[in-house]
Length: 151
Image (cartoon, rainbow, N blue to C red):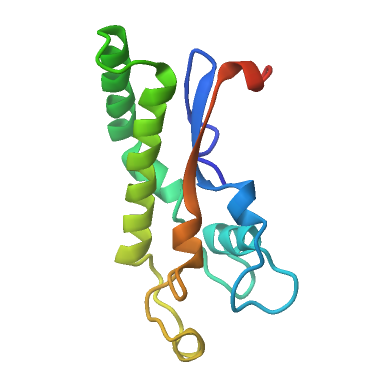
């Protein structure tokens, strides 16, 4: 999962926020079968037949789009003024802040609450945070424009 189709992009550079390949390819703790952490993230973000959707990326972006635009605008101005040395450094700062926001959203609890059977099995009433693997896998990646091609 990435920040979405609206990920921040400036002069070819971009930042994505979510569960990236390095973390997402890990086996999901406590899951039967061959589920990866990315599988669990997708199941929870969008829901399945048995799992209600608990959007921790898309809903976060939807709820904060205006704030994110303003943050990126301020970063752009700081780059032009020389207060931030490069676009990549500015996007790193935004990415770190965004990861913290998503992790806080998960820690605060995303409705609906866990079922009693899930609470009994995982020992947590807070959705998405039973062992902390998903929460800890939220990262950001800054890419320069030269490696991205024509997206």
